[in-house]
Length: 58
Image 1: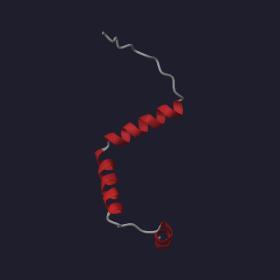
Image 2 (image 1 turned 90 degrees about the horizontal axis):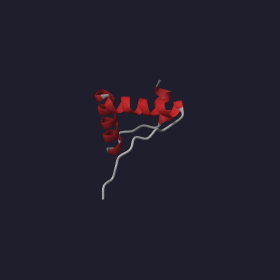
Image 3 (image 1 turned 120 degrees about the vertical axis):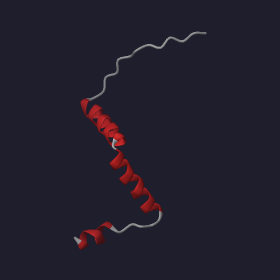
């Protein structure tokens, strides 16, 4: 059995394309991805603050 791969045209709204491009850009940005990883570790270790308390400090 042989399968032939075919090219397909896909149409999506411009806003969806923009969102996908922004996601790819974020995933390719090493600095941003490092910050996200560090943030996730902080959350897992319980190093978090209540947003209301944080805003009061500003």
